[in-house]
Image (cartoon, rainbow, N blue to C red; front, top):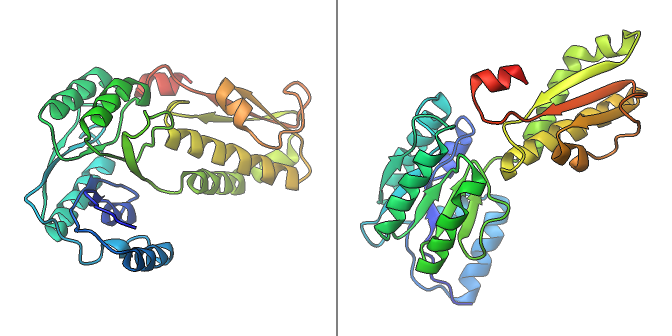
Length: 272
């Protein structure tokens, strides 16, 4: 098998430290089939091993689109970029809007970056539906895109070559386990129906979908293990994605009520 990689990581270091990621790319010459099979086997055991010793063979610079510069989460992602850029011998330009709700600003930044014909693009989209046209352009121009933190489930074919993120289903499940440990006595001793609220950032970004359903499904499992009937109500996507709910909302011992704000702002999330 012949392969010519133009994409590699600036991601793994940031994913390990504070569950943040960022991407970069590097170049590699053609490999023979035996070498590639060996690398695949090693990568299955250690996902970062495939990048050991990887160095860019040109002075690449990549635009890296984060969601904002207003949180320590994205500060940590940039630390990952710095670390990996030194290891891979590439440079990068971090860009992002003032806040995650400034969707149009990020789209303009992405389009400006694409117009300069970069060799690759790292992208954490504020709103996955807003970047469809930009991704189509990347596919047409042959600009490989690595998404990080937020996957794009309906990305145009051929546009996204790699997605780097945490195990989002597991992250949601861990949140449910910890919450249940705090509320199980309340649930056990309740005289009437118990309502558990869950607010998700949106119902379109793949990572948020996975975290939300991971939380809901694990909570259903834990509640039913303690003999409770469970219903899920609210946002249509999460209601349909839930697995194992065994009662209607009016009759269930516990209702998991799911909300999605119109935009990710403190005010709207608090209202939900």
